[in-house]
Length: 111
Length: 112
Image (cartoon, rainbow over all chains, first blue to last red; front, side):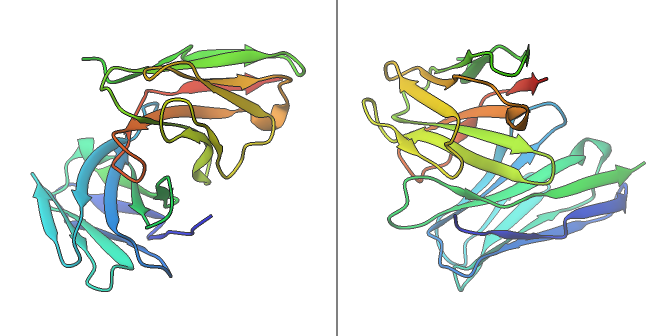
């Protein structure tokens, strides 16, 4: 299947710090999605992006659809302990009947 | 509005046993999906149903079967469980293929 590369694989940050993570592909995507998964739960949709260059915010979270359509970025400002979890990117392509998921970025916030 | 529900939440099977994982959604979505999640592997698509009456294989379909019972329900069956099928299984739904998907809480399956 299509490979989405997420980086970093894991992050350890101090509470209050800002966080940046990204997702890249060798192919063009039409939609980029960002999910968060809390321990023991299913992934929850955070932000959906539909146009190249689009910048969308959801509270302290901001995501961008890369201008090349081959990447996307997620930023979290002023991190708090409840931001802990695994963040997944996902994308859709023309001709595919499902989403492709990245392998996730595991975020740990140190109080 | 419960979203996507899955039963059971936990299950332990012996090798060779069979079981069916149930999934239902109340969002009137057309498309439904089954994923498995293993440590460090992310989400891998097992089977999906783009619309009622259709099912297709995903990335890792071997050892599984599915049934799209109606628009709301999509079940996953393990006919003869193997230890390699120990995983967390997630069901998801979306309005249409390639749209944003909404996930259930997962079923944690252990095969001994």
